[in-house]
Length: 66
Image (cartoon, rainbow, N blue to C red):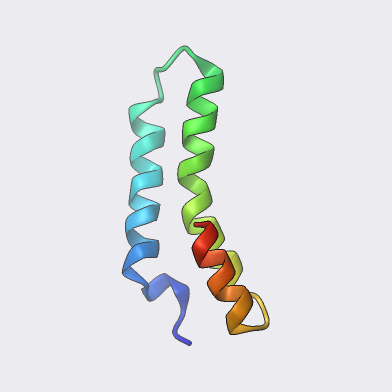
């Protein structure tokens, strides 16, 4: 299995996460801003965590989460 950093979906989700943080930087609704940015960050995080698991089955489960 190749490194997850080479996956296009991981790269795009990282860019999306950065964009969310940038766009919501000035949002005064802190609860909403926090929820949106955390959900955006969860996609690349789940891909990375699944890659570190011991089996393909677990890896695929984390890909479904993301």
